[in-house]
Image 1 (cartoon, rainbow, N blue to C red):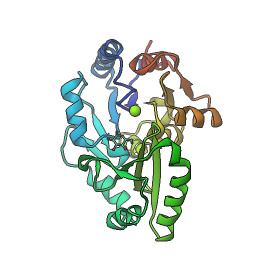
Image 2 (image 1 turned 60 degrees about the vertical axis):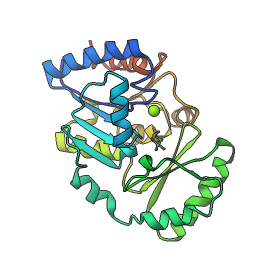
Image 3 (image 1 turned 180 degrees about the vertical axis):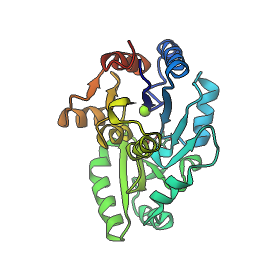
Length: 249
Ligand code: GLC
Ligand code: MG
């Protein structure tokens, strides 16, 4: 078997079925040891909430950690974000102006302080009003000359990021550093902020069986033979996909 680059979201993708997680962890750590496979977590969580999760669930130590919806990359257990990536995404980013502009929208409820990051401004926004609010907010921000990207997940979270960042672009950055091809790479996810994982290149994609409505809607509108919709939920769906693509035999 050859090495591959394994990239997964955490909440409701890697984490959610403890028994399947134990099986997957065992297979992945063995593969890493024997073949040099790399393990990357790509989460919406801040580093703080990521650390909290590591106290709750048995997670393997990743070779790289992508946090805050792709706006921070931590290599080899470092607690300083990769400066090459920060520099790349910083262009045209004006956090204060984004916060001030968003304040005009009563429907946007700020997320906790821990989830407000140097390159990420996050709100709660209900499904009922999201379709109307998001385009209005986006055009107001663009009219102020801001180079941003809005990402809506699980029918409740709205993230504002620099235009040149998201989970998928962060994976492209790592893939180039590690010289891994899209064919050797598999990305796994369940919700809106994972669409970027599936759409920025031709990496093998695994959508877990419990995926949220916005991801399924996108998948149905953009089918591709390098993407697999699993039957099983969470880590069980990841295992299913790894066998489907032949990464595990
Ligand atoms: C995680 C983050 C939150 C973000 C959400 C969706 O839950 O903590 O800030 O909005 O992912 O990306
Ligand atoms: Mg998730």
